[in-house]
Image (cartoon, rainbow, N blue to C red; front, side, top):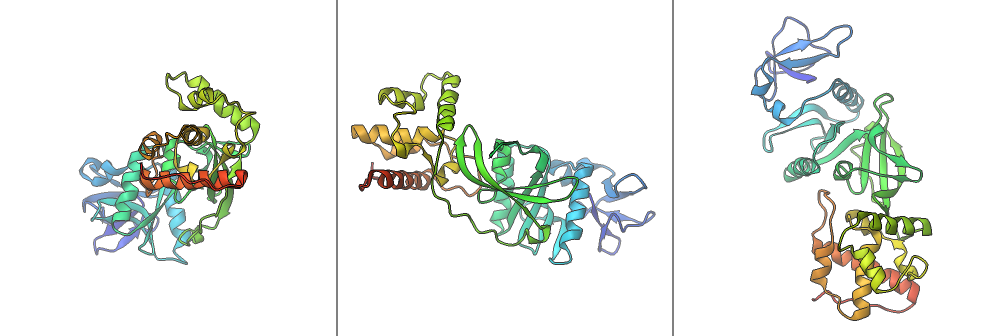
Length: 330
């Protein structure tokens, strides 16, 4: 860790600490040792780490320690920043707490998405927002898409993934725009000043985006490769005798709310299309087939289903030049 408490109760950075003096962990109050040298990154180390809650929380790499320290120095001229701040109400340690309202967490290694949600929820429970800073090199890019893992998607904040470059210390925001199937997202990459991280980033106002024939064929090919007995996308295409070429034009779009579900882009739209054609649409069944992504603050299935239906109706009306209504009652 980079911060400890001295004998007078004052916080001391490892870089400014002096050997031969006594320092203590701000969480468990036990003695810590200053480790400092011409090669080694200055930090404090527990004598018996298993006695401290830090051991249960997370182990930090040298890169993590250095980034935390560099970010702290970059933020302090413009913001009230505290490093390794312990929040007893939720028993969590923020890498950096900015202006007492924003936690900045450096998460270079992959952990379970549910753990990210739990920690984010912990901060939210005491009115603190959080930004998860991920390893920039770990975010996979493929042409005009990025392909985030489930872990990286869980770390997003309002459809934005934040990353940091180890070497340059540059921070980037990756705005997730539209899901193109197979976990591929259209995106906008933006480099930001570290000092601006506490500033509010307004959401993008997006419309629907048309998927190309190549993208649609890739979606269907991916569904065929799964070889599942009940594949809704393939079932609806077969039952309605549809191909990529004969799909109604308004089904060939991807909408903003699709970023929040793991369903293939065609699946949920074909569900609505199929059941409306047969007069069998059922809101309860529609909600049951939705697969919300593991993202903190995501709306419940009921709200999410209504939003998707609104987007479907918008697509239909814009192409058919007529007014479609779908009952939400059943």
